[in-house]
Image 1 (cartoon, one colour):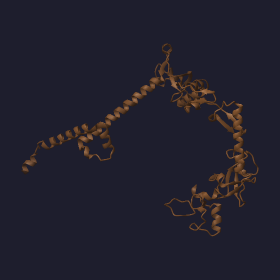
Image 2 (cartoon, rainbow, N blue to C red):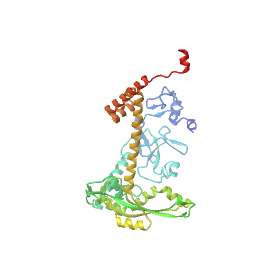
Image 3 (tube, one colour):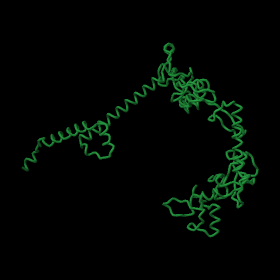
Image 4 (tube, rainbow, N blue to C red):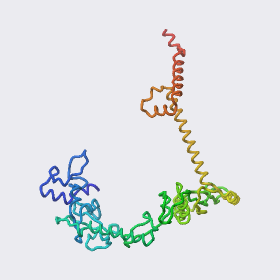
Length: 401
């Protein structure tokens, strides 16, 4: 694929070669991009010479409708429909300052592509740049109009808007307010909330919910209980990983249930997939969405559910158990590493460890001076015992003597 791209030079390289320039003799506004360890050649990824960015960004370009712009506003390095839309091919592109979706003046390939519907090609011109009526001027006027519309939008809403939830719709050319309290909770918003019109509650909590799942017991296949469907309720799951203002929590409990459902759906994606396409029954239901400062438990309801054959699990208990298991695994791993290190010291001694090695740092941190000295003494005693141990002679050794 890359060899095919290098079969032809770009338009800039062709022009400079026709003018007599070479790879080692060329104008200062172009360069040859090759890795430092490779020989300088025009048979490179860019198709030969490329413009120096400091130079090309200051050049003047013209759109198909006659607007001028500087190279800094243009886009380069796009490949589409067999065309390299680059400065070097005099086919850079720019976003239409008028936000026109359809324009018969621009290249036909750009008219056909929905993703590039706002793009049009530009060509370098020798005309003197004039800011008045240029793309930059139109963008500045457009940006000023957007800012004026934003002020007007805020006034229409009596200031009950938040910049984080506002966006300018470029299709309708109007400001929109899409309030999403989940974003406020994720962003840890605090202080004055312009949407609610008051200071956010400093008391913090979370949004808790229960998940009721029904699943087919595949482990009972081939037994008298094959086809049994069990039900479990996981209570006290949290929407946020951190505490949020209770004001935000209460709003999320009312408005973000679809988001909770999607979060649970992603968590059980595999089970739901096998349920839909392989007949392994699995379903879930969101229950009891509430905002609380801390998780509350209804013991009587738990007992009632257990009597009805429902398995009850609390998310906080699962988290605590997982944390304890993780702590135990870390403790066992640490003890194993200490035993391995002590064995190494008993066999070779502390001085055998390299000065800045990981083992020496661990020995200093985990064992301490007293334990290291104790192990060294034990090693010396074992060496002494080995030296003083009597040597048993064989019959062959005795005959030699």
